Image (tube, rainbow, N blue to C red; front, side, top):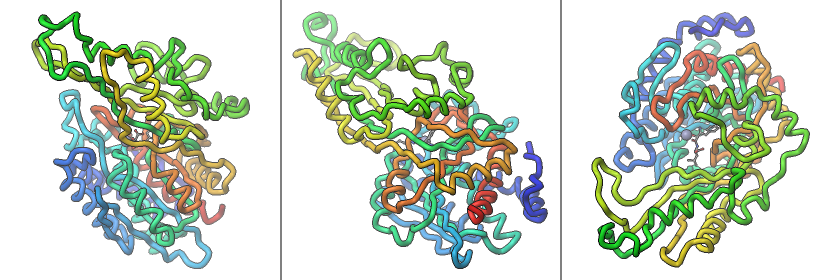
Length: 465
Ligand code: BES
Ligand code: ZN
């Protein structure tokens, strides 16, 4: 499972990296054992422990000025190394140490917070999203400092514990600390590549709007025999409303939804058509019986460059074992939209609410609450750091990276671009089948070790860009 030693690295560094692998994996596993689930209040102390663990690790790796910064939510961890000398560029490395909930627990093959290596994969919640990917960069800095005593560039780590819940603390902190966080480029490893051998540089991520739809009917739950057929069942009304959110061609049916969407240019469509990812890969990775989506667009376009609306959860009435003949008073759904450039993430909730209220029958009350929103991110392809990123991937993987847009969201990316005025390099090491946010999340270990090398190669390449 060792990536072949790269002749382009200094021999001392190369042998350090070879012998450090076991320790790096053990340390990552220690961190993964801490259940830092940001959305669940009962894990608040675990989230803090994960922040402290990282702060300690950053110190032992040789980073300086390490601090955990409290926020109204979970702490931010900061650390830097700024001794690269006059004229050297500064890289801001962003990541997150919070993780998603683990349910449904029974579908995990090994417990989510007891990291388990099977074959070339490390299974644990957070292995790929994002502890493993962030740890790779701490390990990269540690390796270079240990073998040569200095980094070629200045480095600032900025790691949050609220990415999976909307990054509120960091979104407030970042604009107030622009001097401290000033950098030439921001590196984010919280995405994936296309296959273990094929690196990917992402130049666009979708934005997000997430909210909750409530449908209220009778004042309280009712016996379905006594009142069924005479009172509109909120579950049924919600189903009808949810079904009306898309048309038959897979487009979102909410009026105004596409008004500000930037159409794909023919040249971008041609470029995206080169991405070796299509229906076959999609079906293989997801296990879905057939592909689905907006007519007239390829899988790559549907995922990265077109907006969508997803129903993330829907509930109401009795869902335990057995049955109960009830008409619930209320039915609800959690819904989220992925957004593309120029769509106003703050306007989507009102659009959906207006539409649903317009089509809702008089027999129920409908409301929509926004939980969070963030705009899409696009990165210019012509900045010199992009070329440095491509060279770094090439040196380690021996393959030219593919350039594409992706569907997930990293809300803080736009805040970094706007507050610090710097480009972002989305350089991930995960794989599309890493089971992010799902049972059996994993990290492909050869990618982890390559990620460490890419982190090192990037520091070296940035001084020649
Ligand atoms: N690592 C993901 C983002 C991601 C996933 C980017 C796949 C590209 C491809 C990140 O941790 C994440 O899950 N973000 C959330 C943000 C949301 C909760 C605001 C997302 O995209 O759902
Ligand atoms: Zn995530």
